[in-house]
Length: 123
Length: 286
Image 1: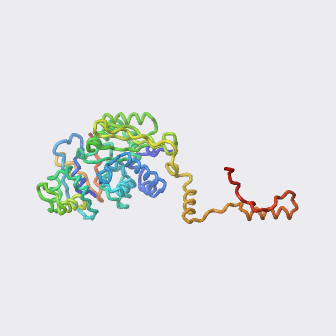
Image 2: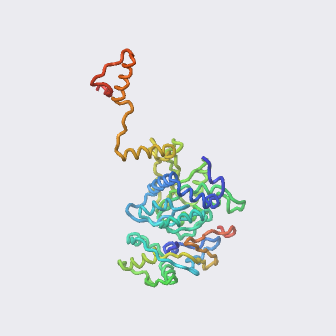
Image 3: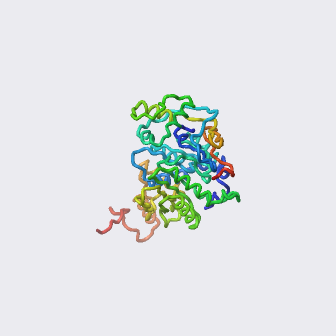
């Protein structure tokens, strides 16, 4: 259940891979929509932490275009609803995440990404 | 008590059967729940505000359920695939990751409002191979440095663990300090063998404003940690209490009268006379 909220926080952690290691790119993904409770307070608190461009790119890659390209100054209910849907309701179930820099592939199966590294990749 | 971390690495020890057993065991559930509540208390999150929490070694999501209950959004990492499978079956709310915490996290700086970990970091103290990256100090360093950067400032991480010696506590705290954490060890019920719990309470930032909380001391409340031995009895008593029926004393008035009658018929001497006060409790004088 990789949601975009966690994808937006996830960078590659392979040894020596420190530049251009965020965001991880999705590949061959299958998504599933699962509804969850709308929590405006949480979203307001969380907004400053988001990398907006990475989020919008990831959402468009998964076929959701409800978010504007620029992070809006004004936050209204409708926008929060859209943000909630993108962040917390789109679940990536199968596929992979690939680091743009070192090309390490983190496979996702059954909704759980495999973040394990080989011995030579541990920092 | 046998130590599972000495038997096999976690991803092997918690295979399919062990993961099922672990999750279905009501005693483990109870202990995990108690420790999660205590860890949340030590985490001291702002009240009535949903936070974004990292659950390190989430297993089958026993602690995650409590985080859900409290309205937090969480991300769980664990190294045992079987445990994560059980978590999927139980349909927990958080995002799950298959990750070796000794290899470090890849989260962006300042991602989380707090982190908890229940009965996990003692697993980092065993070397599985002779490769330098699998030595306990290296793995602990990697774990604490990446955890420190993944937490926002100010925030806390509360890690409950089972140390087997003071040297282990020393090693873990010194590495945590080198990684930039403040804080220290909180021991609940230090004088009780069963209820004793060790929490590593780590702080990120806020220049000395945070101080290490006090461990719980004194009388161990009923059911804290010793919920093993008297499980059945307590359940029975609880059921009786619910039914509302007050238990009758075995030696009540009828019984005494019957016995006296029997003695008299047998011709025993000095059997006390029956009176208004037979079978009644002697109250204290004042």
